[in-house]
Structures are given as C-alpha cells and as structure tokens.
Length: 167
Image (cartoon, rainbow, N blue to C red; front, side, top):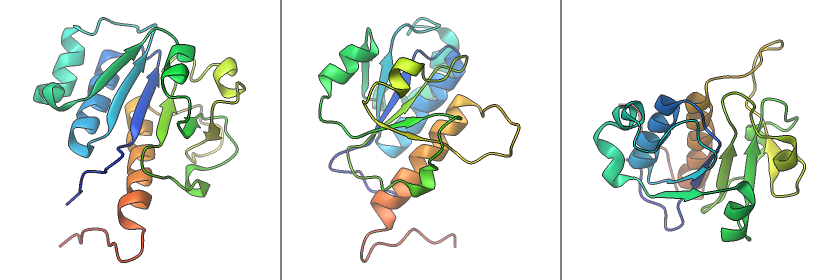
C-alpha cells in the first residue's frame, strides 16, 4: 500500500496538447497523491470532454494548479527541486536521487521541453532509457515511469522501508 507523502511530488506538464494524456496523468496524481501543475498554453480546454473521460471519476481527488507561463510557475515555486524530463537528456532518471516535494517537469507531446526551459537553469535534465534511434515515448507513460521511480526511492528505499510484496 502506498502511504501519502508529507510533501507530495509535483507533476508539471508544460504545454500539454493531447487531452487523454493529461487526463491519464490526473488519474495518476489521484492514485499516488502527487500534485498536478499545468503550464499554458494548453492544446485543449480544461473542460474538454476527452480530458474528463481519461481522468474518469478521479478529478475531485486531484490537486490542480494552472499557470500562464513557465516563468510564472517557477516564480510560484522558487525553491523547488526540479527534474526536467527530456528524451535528449544524458543523465538517466535512475541516476537521480529523488526527495519528497520534488517537481517532475515534462514537456509537450509535440516539442518536449523547449530549449529555454532545458537551458534556463531551473532544474536538472533527466531521461528515460530507450533503444537507440527512438524519438520518444508517450507523455503519460513517461510521467508514470518517472513518478513511480521517484515514489520507489522516496517511499520504499529508505532505511527500514520495504516495497509491498507481490503476493
């Protein structure tokens, strides 16, 4: 069983374009206790039917913040530890040491995180290992992989903590 964190992880989607991906991430937030942050411009309306359907009946359990720009988000969380996920990052997420309260930042399905975000000094770039010659993976899949690695480290890797058994 996953226990709520005193300082939850924040999942940040910068300019997501596909409603079902964002809905799936919202559902992930609901079942893990992570906070969802969306950074505009969005490729859909927050009221989008596909977005709501992908999140199913979990929307009332999702902590959602919306920021008009990446700069406004950074200003709201100036001291956050940010991990910037990119298919072009050299450091693997498995080399990172996640902590409670960390912000996991993901870019648009179309462009990923823009160079000004990647090079702006607001976080550490991380990648998810993939076979060579592959461009990227689905946004909601990437968020799930990153989130559960962070949760594994924060919730189960500490002294005396054990992951739940599969039995």
